[in-house]
Amino acid sequence: ESQLNPNYSFENFLEGDSNRLARSAGLAVAAKPGGTSFNPLLIFGGVGLGKTHLAHAIGVDIKDKHPEKTVLYISAEKFTQQYIDSVKKNNRNDFIHFYQIIDVLIIDDVQFLSGKSGTQDVFFHIFNHLHQNGKQVILTSDKAPVDMQDIEQRLLSRFKWGLSAELQNPDFETRVSILRNKLYRDGVEMPEDIIEYVAKNIKSNVRELEGAIISLIAQSSFNKKEITIDLAKTIVEKFVKNTKREVSIDYIQKIVSDYFQMDVDTLQSKTRKRHIVQARQLAMFFAKKLTKASLASIGSQIGKRDHATVLHACKTVDNLSSTDKQFRKYVEDITKKLSV
Ligand code: ADP
Ligand code: MG
Image (tube, rainbow, N blue to C red):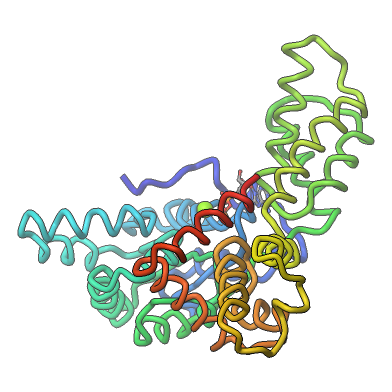
């Protein structure tokens, strides 16, 4: 009913420098839901770094310590869908009322609300009601509030009221403990040098870290092979290659400039020649779309521009690809090249 997954507990959420602030804030909120200044508590960070896990852990711990409280976990996507359904069925007020009587509301991946003004509006009212009544709100997002786009200002300012805590890439020690803990829970033994090899080579995504260990165990048990460092190498390579394909801003600039048969310096130059400006805007657009970099960081890497220029570029590309056939072809071609 609360939609909480008991396996996503604090106990199973290994602590490290990368998550200490977020984890401790989560524990504080769980001890006194609505009674700390961390309201809302917003947990942000990249893919696979534990946002969903930590959000559940807080909810699970609250249910444990305060069984009388109603706790609800929901993804922003599902919340949006429910809202749309309620409008269709003419019971928008029931929808609002349902959420306003919850003690602890956990909404995962709020970046999904970008550009959805109806849902943002209804969430704004629910949020205000809960907050005024001392109820706890916990949010997760793939970006910090300052980097969120197409979210109404009044909602963004609410997001900043409490605490925003980042989940960063775990360091080597933490990656090793996460793997050891997972193996222990699954009752699997694995040589220490192999655990360390995997932890050393998969750095930026805990889900992939676990994925590599799971394939390693599967490969060895289905093929009755011993778990050797060579087997570990083959498996890790697959994961690392996949991650590398998640592309860097340098790679995007290279692909875009090759496509327009210019070099990267030209793409970055100050010129206002139309085809060069367009190439630069496309590079910015793809950097925004395919990397986790902030607007400011994209701008500084693509010819030292500021974040407003990048934002403008993204909007221009959006507009042109819906009005200009030739331009849409550029976007499609480059998308294909970037996903090879
Ligand atoms: P996100 O929501 O940020 O994409 P998830 O919460 O889905 O990430 O985490 C991905 C996987 O990594 C999950 O299986 C989760 O249990 C695991 N994980 C992430 N961080 C930790 C951690 N600190 N300790 C143990 N497991 C972790
Ligand atoms: Mg998640």
